[in-house]
Amino acid sequence: MSITLWFDPICPFTWRTSRWVRDVATRRGESVNWRFMSLAILNEGKDIPERLHTAHQKSLAALRVLAAAEERFGQPAVDRLYTAIGHRVHDLDDDLTPDTLAAALADAGLPSDLLRAADDAAFDMLISESHHLGQSRVGTESGSPVTAIDDGPGFFGPVVASVPPADEADRLIDAMRLLSTVPVFSELKRERAPLS
Image (cartoon, rainbow, N blue to C red; front, side):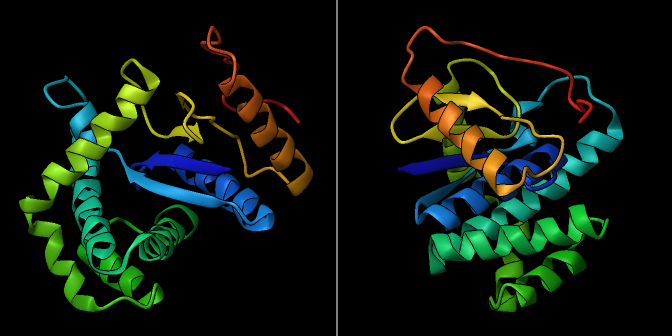
């Protein structure tokens, strides 16, 4: 089995989902295909608060660095760098600045010269193509994350209130795998912070 996760590094919901996916894949010896999606692209031309626009532009810079890391060092580098960025931004509450990206590169054991990609719009085409592929797998406009199992459809989410423990994490991926095989299945939803 392979799991494909389209992610925007600024999204806290995506961060929790990514940790769940990574945990399950590691324990089961399965692969995660890390793909880029951009909330900047998703919200282009929309009337959103300036603080979100600023956050999305910072995240686009991070996506460029992630794309450069993948270009030079492959998927393992994306995994390490997204983990390092996410830890700093979502666990430590660091702002997604160039200094944070530089520190994340060091944490991930990647060369500091990758930081130059943050300002290199040449990576935007690759990010856009990945973003639109994820959206097409869902079939409609969708936020971050998008998750797909094997060659099945993409789904928005799942959004998890926290990273589930191993037994629940396994049940959740098995449920997604099952739902992916039902062509007429469309959507499930509940509150984002359910009581436990």
